[in-house]
Amino acid sequence: MCCKLSLFKFSILIFSIFIFKLGISQPAEKYNSREQYIKKYSSEAVNQMVQYKIPASITLAQGILESNNGNSELAKYGNNHFGIKCHKWEGEGIYQDDDAKNECFRKYSSALESFKDHSLFLSKRGRYSFLFNLKLEDYKGWAKGLKKAGYATNPQYANILISLIEKHELYQFDKSSILAKNIPTQKQNTKHDLMLKKQNKHSVSIHQNNIKYITAKSGDTFYSLANEFEMGLWQIYKYNNLDKGDILKINDIIFLQPKRNRCNVKFHVVKNGDNIKSISQFYGLKLKKILKRNDMSIEDSLLIGSKVYLRKSKK
Image (tube, rainbow, N blue to C red):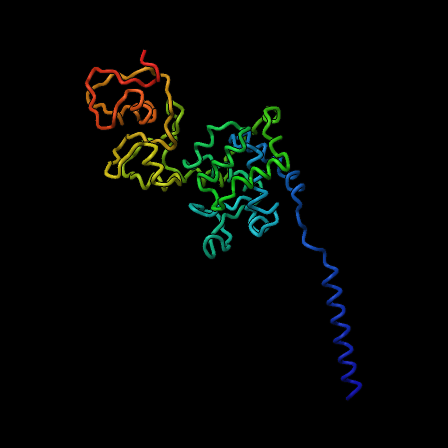
């Protein structure tokens, strides 16, 4: 009995040693360095810049930060390199605690799909539209603008992106010489692309003063438009000089980004039904600029046939 018990213990010991050796002999999970991440995805960041006019340096810096160089759980198991949550997503999701518990994040079939969706996410949503007025080389403006638009809650988000770009010289990928060498390839619409296009029922147009806008349809409300373009309701009101009591009418022009400080027209001749707000909306010119250039207040009435100056000089 004693020998049998000792043999049993010996067998357990040998088995344990075998399992231990088997465990430590397994290769460690691959960990991407920052340099490897930049080398692997810089060409795709440039490709996205060519197609969507988002600085490659910004795309790379966000990918580095949001995915921890591609080592985060979202990146490894969901190919999500930019921390984009599900929102109106119809594809698969991956769940993880973030601002709240068990939040849904978008899951992609590849990292490249994540890069493309990141570009679409920024270019299709009104709250980021002002960023596309910046130069591609203005990575600081883009970084600060992303924080301002609410891409991340970290108060140091812009500074972190700028630091990453400058430390690793990512701005080199934004140079015009690189842009010129890369011609965007025309690809057929994928199921993913078509799914994203279905999200917005309004076509976005460009105003003559170079501002994105949509035309209101039957059933629209200010809230539904803000929700559709993932903007704050306050942005819809601010960009269009609206008051809370205003009613949205069919065919109303609704700007999705701020109006301009200037326009090419010198003055407007007042017609029946005109008011300062309607003139501001027609020309895509900021209301406060019109008031200042005409020494007026919002309460002042307009005389039919009088001139409202739209440019600084009244000569």
